[in-house]
Length: 373
Image 1 (tube, rainbow, N blue to C red):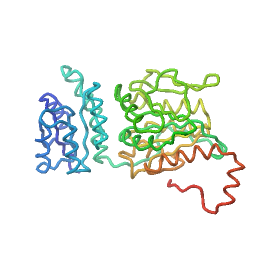
Image 2 (image 1 turned 30 degrees about the vertical axis):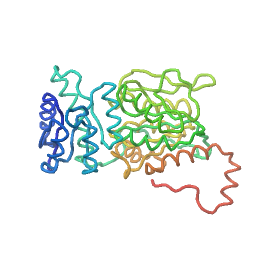
Image 3 (image 1 turned 90 degrees about the vertical axis):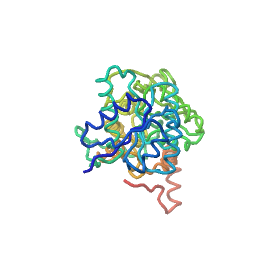
Image 4 (image 1 turned 180 degrees about the vertical axis):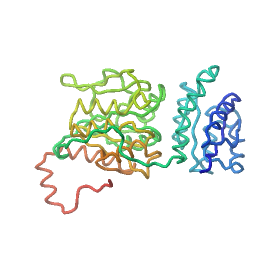
């Protein structure tokens, strides 16, 4: 297999050198060129024909956002990974870049004086994303090792959904930007979300989503009481859980060890909602790299809850949802555009008295549901 051809675009000589050396050390990758600003990068793309571009957010002459907008008009399918600083300005620009069509992002090392540490962090974060986006490792999805046999679950029709729990990673910000605005203002249950992102990024993502949605969307905070028609996104660097106390369910945050190399982790959230709500959980696993969410999905299924996933065709990376599906834990798979209507339908239908449903079934010959598994 030919190596993945990469164009590195960054105005910092240090970052260009760090990235080039780190990427070139992997035999599956080849840095075919560098550029110090967007104008130079756009001129080099037709000559170098890269398979992927790493693109700095803040550059002179033509910054990352302007470059990305121009690049997407010319090369709509070329994978682009943004390089941004872990600052308010850098996070805001990265959210903008994802909305413009960036494939993913990595935050820059904050201390380039510690070269070994900087190289290791870049290697750990960037290399898997490049390979996933470029299909260097074709997905051979098989059940996750170590899964328990799923116990028989109660019939789905007997469970009234009281919460929706969502987990996502690579491609998630744009997927959430389609999902949450599709949830109606009178949605009868709360929504809790884990999106793999660092601090600052999750708050800004919640603010952007709130501006587009009919329901309030905010970053999760300790002690927040869950309410219908309201979504909470786990804050970066904190696991978010749901706890049942008295007549209420509320959010809790902790900084326990990362799970699946993630904090927040989907497994942590899913495990907690399974314990707090039992069979009354509708879980949704969307686009993302890795296996986070599989063990949590098993906990939800064993408690009698329901798990649905985003389908392969509309996922940026079908790692997380694909492994849930391959492990036999998904009740159904849906295209991204169908998820919000399907979630709404399932939640509302679960809350209709069974006698009313029986009457409706008897008066219609066509099935209520069509989905792919």
